[in-house]
Image (cartoon, rainbow, N blue to C red):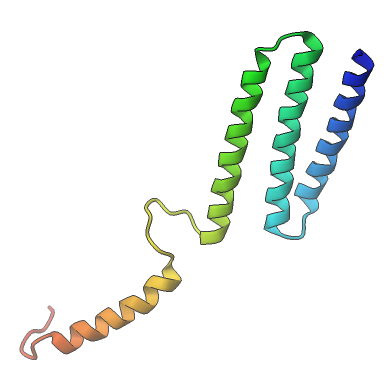
Length: 119
């Protein structure tokens, strides 16, 4: 039975190595994010196999926690790629606000009394 665990562990390590190659050589950002997600998923599987191999079933809780962190990290990375910048608040990207600012500046210039001038 231990041979099966070792073969499965070796196959997972090979898949992790291929994922690292894809993360380093990926032509796009999405390929790299997918490779990091693959690496995290295979790490969870490797911890689960190690837990069954050693008989320490409490490591399964750690692997579940790591899978949750992997999921949240990938979602955060995809949102970062989608927006293109780091945002501290939930504002809209500059491309959308730039057009509105021009309209607001024109509207403010029309509504401003002629005697008022900024210093």
